[in-house]
Amino acid sequence: MTVHKHQHGLDRAEDQHQFYREQTEMRSEFGDPSLTLKYPTDRDSGSYICKVHNKRNKRKKTVMLRVINRQVEVDSEAESVLLPFRTTPELPEDATVVWWKLEPEHVKVHVYQKGCELAEEQEESYRNRTQISEDLLRTGDLSLTLRCPTDGDSGTYRCEVYSETKKSCREKTVIVKVQKRSQGQTMDIRKRRKSTGPSPLLDPQPL
Image 1 (cartoon, helix red, strand yellow):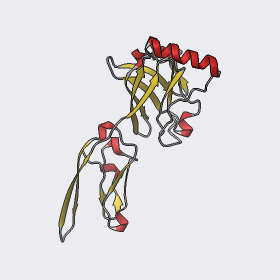
Image 2 (image 1 turned 180 degrees about the horizontal axis):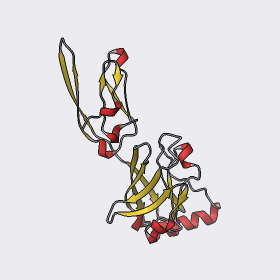
Image 3 (image 1 turned 30 degrees about the horizontal axis):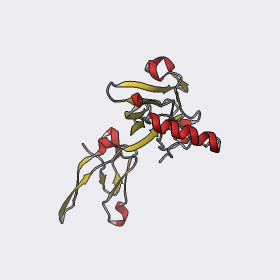
């Protein structure tokens, strides 16, 4: 597929694959054909070939890209865990935001559409346990808070954002690992809390 095309001094967005629109940038005015790919995801991993040609010469270069997914680790005794995702602000008003869990089953964790959260489309086990920002489309902060995590919540999560009007898409994959404490560790922590008082919960920081 065509990721980016520059011809006669202009970027040819109409020749790009839809998936890459508004995600690429090339500083061709400086004679540098290097490509900047914004908001990379694991699906962008692979081989990219740049071809530069004019009347005098032709050049070609291949680049291998490997995108490593963000991993978040949380204790099973934690009150919540944050799945971070920040993208461009001022998203379209008709944008749909869906957080999925990809394994062991492909299920919907949280759905936001037309300014509303659609609890009826969530997998039952996630109802009343998820939360996203109220002003997410304006700020571009699509991070998901998952309350009362258990070892059953461990797995791969993906957030997908798409708009019918702008025909654009954003996505992010986060791997969550919930670590279950042994009985001895839990008892030791309870003793320390009793002697030192409550300690603040620190959620994993977003990107």
